Structures are given as structure tokens and as C-alpha cells.
Image (tube, rainbow, N blue to C red; front, side):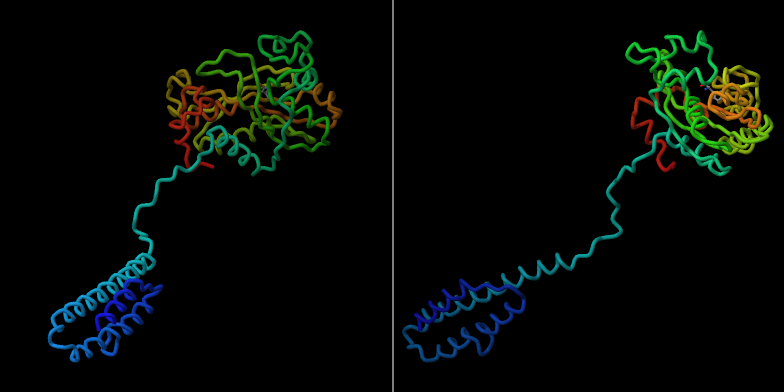
Length: 340
Ligand code: PHE
């Protein structure tokens, strides 16, 4: 009897189960009424009276061991089932994700492209490293024009013919050289000028150039186009003002102001208490510039304009220092979350 108890005890110590079903099988095998442990209790009747006490104790120990072992196995599987049955808690707050943001200059550039796209303007670009012809000569700058001066232009490798473009008007020339009218295009891009960096000026900035060439294009078309743009960009209430100006490649030339959308025209330090802010230069394309590019100035006329993206962005978002655009401080940049 004692041998059988030892044998069963050893067996029970080594049992394993890989599922809840197996645990139940083991319970039936050892502890059910017809199980192996119960069978020993049945045989207990035949144990001689002198050994009953000792064998009875061993039997009880065996039964408790078996029960303990099966309980342990059972609770292991119960825990596992709980974990796998656990569903994600959809009411918990999500982890914080900082969405990326577009740079304010990109936002405004895209908006300018979109506004002109609606009235049929397509987009092109040109090289940032230019030659004298496209940046100056073809645009009717005389050889001694002050804009060519070393103080304004970054020349490359001491070669006065190769330079960083000082305006996107160079892309007007490239486009007119390669495209037959009608032309209705805008050219966004970076430009470079040798200027001291301050709250209002930088040596790298961005422009969008516009060019419209066809038969019978007039100054009235230019004015109407710019008025449409100003109202789309700054709101329906916006007023424009054209002042006479001079550029070698346009005649007549003008500069356009918009009513200050920071003070509503009453006067503030952004508009220097005038109620107006200058945002672009424009004019009718000079016949010399058309002829320089092989477009017959007797049959075609056109207008061009060039605007500074930084200036427009500062006005739109009330940004007072242009240097913020290039420092890439995330505290500044993350304010533009959600804009396209
Ligand atoms: N290129 C001029 C500038 O940079 C702007 C301009 C563009 C003026 C087109 C007239 C026509 O100041």
C-alpha cells in the first residue's frame, strides 16, 4: 500500500498539462470517484489496524498534493485566458502624437498657387544659379544698372556672368524664350541678395513671379487680376492701391499696396501708420524684353508681377520678424498645425 502511495505521489509531482481540457482529464484520472487516489481510499479498508494511522496520514497527504497540483495548473490557464480575452479599452486617452506641420512659407506659397490656379495659371520653375543674360540683360537692365552691383548680387567664383538669381523675373525670360504665347504662368522660388539680415530683410527669401502674355492684354487686366488675388488672399474687404514705379523690364511699372489687415487701415507699426502695406512690383512687359526672347512685341502684350512670400506671410499671420522663418524654432512652427 505504501509503495503504491509513493508511486502515485511521484507521478503526480511530474504531471503537466497544455490546456484546461487536459487539467480536467487529470482530475478525472486521479481525483474523481473512480480515480486512482479514490481507489486507494477504497483499499484502505484492508489495511491492518496497526498501520491504519500511518497509512491514513500518507493517503490524506497524497490527496491534498494532488488537489493542490491540479488547482495550480487550473489557475495558470485561467490567468492566461483572462489576458487573451482582455479587449483594448477604447475609452482610454490615446498617446500624444505631435502632427508635423507645414512651414508657414510653404502654406502661403501653396495658397498663392491655388488662387492663381483657379484662373488658369500653371506653375513652372527655373534655376537658382543663373547667368547675367536671364537675370539682368534680357530683362533690359543696362550694363551699368546699379542692381548689378556687387553689393546686391552674389556672384559665383569671381565670374561676373554666373550668379545667384536676385529675383524670379529670370524665369520670365526662360519661359518666353521657350514658350509661344499665350502664356499664363506663375514661378515660385528662392532668390538671393547680399543684404544684412534684420527683422525686415534676409539674404535668402522667396518670390512668386506671374506672367501673362497674349494679344490685347491691358493694364486693366493686370489690375483686375491683382485685385482678385488680394481679396482671395486677405479677404473680401481688402483694398488695393497701385503706385507708379520703375523696373527696367516693365513699362509702365507699378507697386501694389494692400490695406493693412492688421489694423484694418487705421494705422499700426506694421504699416508704419499709413494703413497700407506694399506686397508686390508689377507692370506691362517692356517691348524690349519681349523682343529679347523672340516674341513679337507688335502682336503681343502682357503683364508681369513679382511678390515676396515672406511679406505676405507676415501680413497674413501677423509675424513681426522675418528671421523667425529661418530659425525653425518648433514653438513658432507648431502654431501652423492643420494648415495645408
Ligand atoms: N523682380 C522685381 C523685384 O524683385 C519685381 C517685379 C516682377 C516687378 C515683375 C515687375 C514685374 O523687385
